[in-house]
Image (cartoon, rainbow, N blue to C red; front, side, top):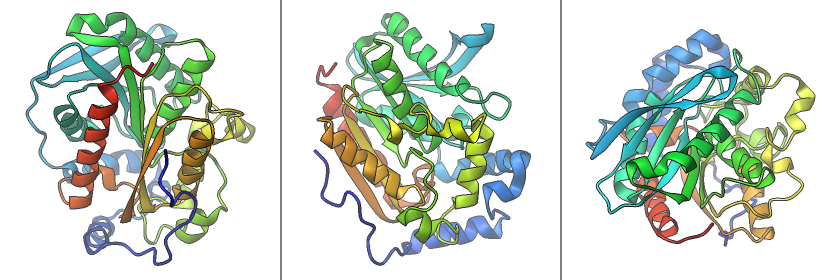
Amino acid sequence: MTISETSELRPNGQLTAGAETLLAQLRSNGFESYSGLGLDGARAAIRGMIALAGPPEPISRVEKVAIPGAARRDLHGQLYIPDAPSPLPVMVYMHGGGWAIGDYTLVDPIVRALANRSGCAILSLDYRLAPENKYPAALEDVYDTIKWTAKNAHRWGLDSERIAVGGDSSGGNLAAAVTLLCRDRGGPALSFQLLVYPALDHLYQNKSFQRFGNGLLSALSREDVTWFHQLYSNTPKELDLPYLSPLRAASLVGVPPALLVQAEIDPLFQEGAEYADRLAAAGVPVERKILPGMFHGFWRAAGVLEEARNALDDAAKWMRRVGNRTLC
């Protein structure tokens, strides 16, 4: 199912007091836009925002893992295992950052909270970044990790029949794209997907880009999105590919149930709304949660925004409910 507000932005489009204060704080610390900072500056800026997530929660078990990947190199990830009865469902989670900035330390407090609250193990992945490694490097890394997880889940008391994917922003793009890839390549089967304000297309003139693309009310602008797309893709034409822009997939039939978490004040709002509608039309169970007055990036600010903490709790409840079923 999907909620009724699938395609329209709310009329006010105003930040909450907390979100406005946080955005002003970021601006006062020198953050104007990712694209304006350049690659090195953007990578430094996102590292400086890690503290916004708050202190990391204790969790029963954390292990660093090495995963055989493409180009004869190991991928690295961090596996979070909560204190819950085994075999546990496991989610492969991808951090955001425009495919070009950040790493799994960026979302460490987030995945700890999700794992503890959901009873689902989470493997947080350090996929290869652009522009050093352009499309499809990151996507193939995610796919290799899912295959490795399916083969090795038993080593940690995890359930190879209940593998999920999740991610925020560009990580949400990778999560959505890999569900298509797994479907089209005949597996591994996935049980569910958590998509947090995902990047799903490149229509820079839709309603939400028109309203929020100037970046004045959000930590993401039209210029940022186009810059990140240029860093990730090899050619502009490649942006039409469904594994890069999942909203352009000919069919979404056969992908797993989804929870879509959206910030209201976000250039990517419209494409997320349309994706939810297309999932529902394809017969895919989908729930959609809109956070009024939140801007793109709020998910990583649970240490300062109550709305972010509540969104994490809600996502974990959904993961627990869906993960306890055998959906694949």
